[in-house]
Image (cartoon, rainbow, N blue to C red):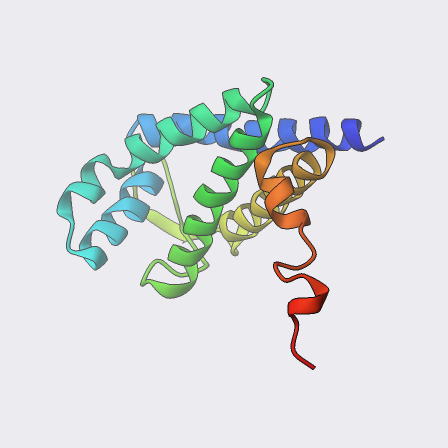
Length: 158
């Protein structure tokens, strides 16, 4: 059952990442708004121009890794990407509600927070896959977190 859940969550994460690549790699108005806002806010103008490509490549790599024996790394990578996205939505001028654009590139409303909600769901899914993979493998991180105490009982003062 756990294996099926990991595959379903991995497929969901990859679907969201891959369908967003069109926007990131085609300079869609939504992408220009998001990364332009972040570039202006951060003072790194280059991020407004090229940030979408970097994030898109990272999402593509994570999506591929989710379906290989390196799924743990893909899920961890997806978690980090989405934690960053959530951070930027909450703590920058970007905000939770993203503008919607028509075919001419004009703002016609907002998305009602759908992009932010999707980021939260993808983040939770990626964290769940990461944790499930850590629990079910003998990865060195598991051994690190499995230690109950760094002290022996006779070293603990009364």
